[in-house]
Image (tube, rainbow, N blue to C red; front, top):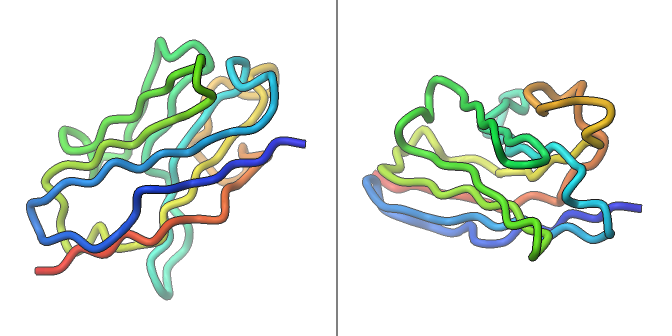
Length: 126
């Protein structure tokens, strides 16, 4: 069983930065496509960013392009989301997501996700 544990959320002022981390258990992390999603109160969970198993390709939602960067360290079984120039509308619970690379190349929708983390709260004050 794969377990995902997020950390790094918190309260930050608009324009600030946070780095989220997601530690993944299991020996097959390097074969998993990874992603980040977020869910604001009263809204559906939405795609933020994804990275292929090798880290060679990354895709972002339009609303975070140029501000967020997804990366992974396969030696540490960890995926990161560096968030810069944060806006109040970025306030949400952020979830780490994973799927075996043999099933999907990237995780760009909730239907492609096999495993979820418990989420970490990010709050951006104006």
